[in-house]
Image 1 (cartoon, rainbow, N blue to C red):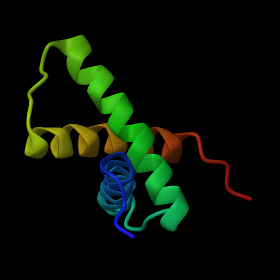
Image 2 (cartoon, one colour):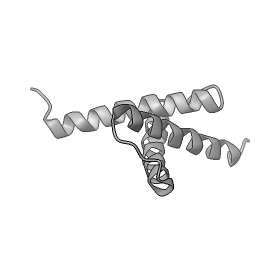
Image 3 (spheres, rainbow, N blue to C red):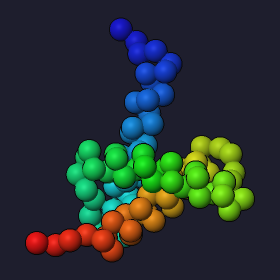
Length: 88
């Protein structure tokens, strides 16, 4: 059974979100947040990056631009979480 176009888009979105979240974790601190955490950071970072790029007027279209925008948003998000992280 072949996934529908919408399901395929969601799968791809979560896959890219995981990659972006993991890469942001590596760039900021040296490790990721685990698979689910990386996906969450990547997805929220992508949304934050898209909002930030539109707010500043630095928005570009295309897959590579979207990947870079998501990565920048995720890196900012990871950096913010590292600042406010409470260590036991």
